[in-house]
Each structure stands twice: as structure tokens, then as C-alpha cells.
Image 1 (cartoon, helix red, strand yellow):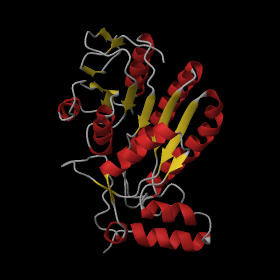
Image 2 (cartoon, rainbow, N blue to C red; image 1 turned 180 degrees about the horizontal axis):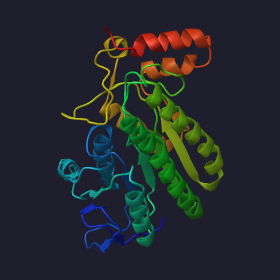
Image 3 (cartoon, one colour; image 1 turned 120 degrees about the vertical axis):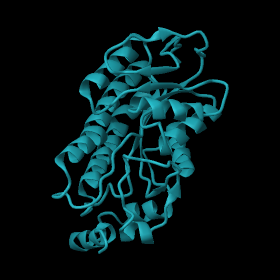
Image 4 (cartoon, rainbow, N blue to C red; image 1 turned 180 degrees about the vertical axis):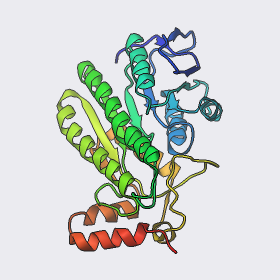
Length: 289
């Protein structure tokens, strides 16, 4: 593998372009996992499991204080690096990727976990929230995929894991923007899987259902508390999703659907009449009166 001996300091904030600094405790022979949305929830659990497997972990998230506190909870002797960057901000995103290139850092595994959820009527949602969702779930994730797959192909190895959703294969009224953004990620990931596989690079997509969060506050998560989806359908743990992510990275599988709900959703996709599918999804996600 490509040997890296330069890294950012333990914590770094990307308000503007900056250069990485030399690190004296960085293990140059350890493979690197780069995780977005790593300050809580699934991303933080992926970081914990990655460190336990011996990876050097780079944790990315927007809020520097929450990210620092999250990194401190990750056990292990090899401390994770954490970089505060708002991926919806094009300038910060470019600055971060330029810094990676200047440090000649290409992760062995990229996990695109960062995302925004938004439930309710599309018409009633503030445009600012919808725009932020599309920027993070689609534009930023596409940018990171493009940056990583290009450099991994040149190196001849690497794995990308993109976080989609159980609703990715179905238009979902009252969950419209989120479901559409995850359908985009599903389509992009599966296409990239075919383009990159002959170059030694795998691109996988994960389709989790509702996830039980251990985070006290998750500002990015959709509020489904007043829907039949949350009341009727079983959820899965962050641990199970993180385990599926690392399984995908190690196996190179094109798609993984953890949990019975996702399995059923994927198995029946395209087999029900469209009108019935739309009624079913509307019933599940329309807020209860």
C-alpha cells in the first residue's frame, strides 16, 4: 500500500485552506479509514469499530466541539484524527480535499455517512433545509466519491461505502426529498461499482432502515416519531449498521441491506403496482393526526 507519513494534528478546523502538519505518532503502515458524519450515531460507531480493527481513523463532522468530544470516546492507543469541515460549504470541502492531496493522503476506506434527514410535506419544508439536504446528501457525497475513486483507481486499491436508505428504491410521499436523495446515492454507487471494480476499487452502498440512535441530540435526523413507519417497523442498532459498513468495505459487495425491513423493501421493489406502492409509502410516512 501507499505509505503515508504526514497527517493533520489530532484536531483540525477547516474554516479556510490550511496545510497538514507533520505527526510524530502517526503509524505510517496502518491503513486509513475516512468517515464523514462521525460526531455521533452511526459514524461514531464506525470509528470505534475501525479503531478496534487496527485502522487509523479520520473523523469528519461540522461541529468541532461535538467532534472533539466524540473522538475522545473512541477507545484504543492509536488516537483518531478529527477534522471539522462543513461539507455543504464548497470552499471548505475543496480546502479539505486540497489538504488531503498536498499530504498525499488517500484513504484505504472512505465511508460517506454524513447526511440530513427531513420528514413531512415537501411544500411546507423551508427551502433552506431542503437545499442543505441536497447539498450534503447528493453534491458533497458525489464530490467525495469523485475525488476518492479517481485517486484509488490510480493507486489500484481502495473501498468506498456510501450510506443510502431502505427507502432508496421507492418514491416516498412525506419523506420525498430524503428518499429521492438516497435513490440518487443508490444509483450512483451501483454504477460506480461497475466502473471501478476492474481497477481494484470497490464501491458499496448500504440500505439501513430506521436506526436506534444513542445520541442525545441528532440535529440531522428526520423526525418520524408521529408516523406509522416508526410505530410499526422494527429498527436496528448503530452497531449493526457499522458492522455492515465494514463488512461491505472488506468484501467489496455491491449492496448490503441490513435488517428484515430493508430486505423486504429491496425484495419487493418494482414488483408492486406504482399506485399501490405510493399508497403504502404514504400511509407509512404521512404524519398521524
